[in-house]
Image 1: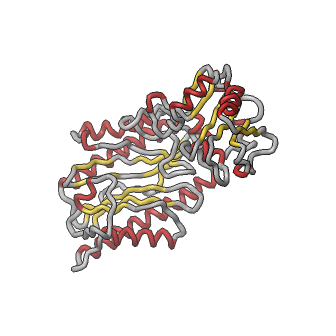
Image 2: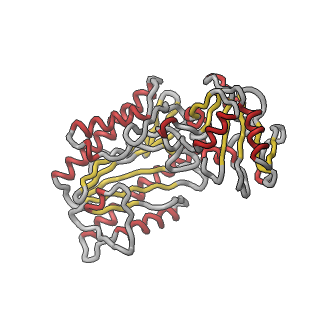
Image 3: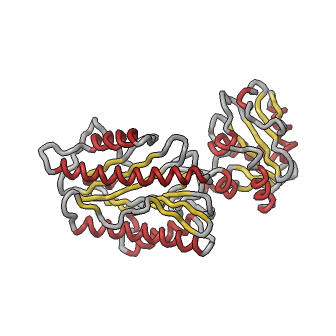
Length: 393
């Protein structure tokens, strides 16, 4: 949340980037970065703007009929209102005329998670006299996607709980697979959700339980309407994510075979694991050496392993996503040079997933997912004991 105690650091970052300010815009929640930073409470049905200058107090602008949501806006910071579009555009001109500003904008939609301001608003701001509009990406990384000490502590607890639940789920599915009533995918989903509840963890949806050829669908969802048994001899993928209420998600994917793995399963697993480990190694070495590293660089490192083994066309998604305090799939840097052009640096204070996968439709899919959090001089990988070998149950 934008607050007086965070303002000095933010303004130093603006000055370092040679920016006159950061202009936040939102309308009906189409910019979750702005709405997350402002944390307004109540109905906001009209356009809002907040100007954060490199010097001086921030200024807010909202519609005259919507004063209530601004009740937590610091009293020492100016707040204006508008009714007409002429008043709105005049007030914007006063904020931005002759200034170089940042907004949630990504040239060419290179990073959709950043590209939140409509082209029409960009045009309006330029017409109001802004000399240059640049992406707020680096500001978003530092002041929106960053974790607190409490966030990290919570994430570490959740990660270890989720690991235990995943391993227990495999054991249960394995036991049932050798009976006359094997467990259904959707039954294991409900079992995992019950374990989350017992551990006082919450989740937005999922988990993903994929048996056999369903593992080759990266966004497969089990359903009681089309029950699928988890049978002996199959591959089983479990992707599960949860958080303590109000904290930061832990997100993991584990792989097992029910019975001895086939040569094919072992081959695919080894490729995915090695790609994951190449990404982890690059992140850890760069952190230890305080060497700049882009999200795209990590994606390239993982992808190179899979390409070298002849399966590059089967790795069809990015290597990892941002995890921030607001969302499981956050607005910070992603590990991506496939779906998007992620040029932002991975800096201390942020977290993300590392999850390469390989998918052969109709046959088999494998993915291995861990999370990383960056501190000055080191990268913390969660869970502490992540998967090294294919689990056999």
